[in-house]
Image (cartoon, rainbow, N blue to C red; front, top):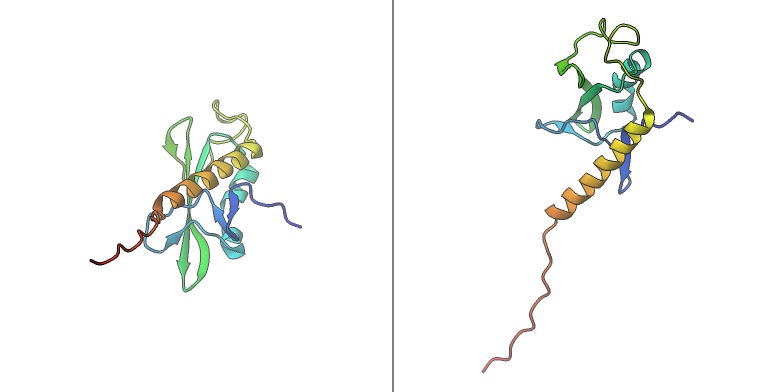
Length: 136
């Protein structure tokens, strides 16, 4: 069995990615095996496992198909977007610190909780119906 991605969480039978950016018309935070298979994040972490890397993934949804087409990466320590990793790595960057998968799991847990709170706020409040008053 494959190791689950630490950035995924499950809610109400659906799988979501807390790295997913849901800011365009055809993007979603929901993921499926194809979206995870096309995601660049695991490969980047395998080669440059620094805790200062910040990821954002655009999961595109077209005709029910979910794919991770765009991956944004920035360094939180240097406050710069990364397009290559030539200056990133142990012994290369002074800011480098090892990435801990437990941090990713905790962030995914926090994302799931924030999603639950957001959905609870979006639900309309059901007021009890008032009994009809007798007509005079």
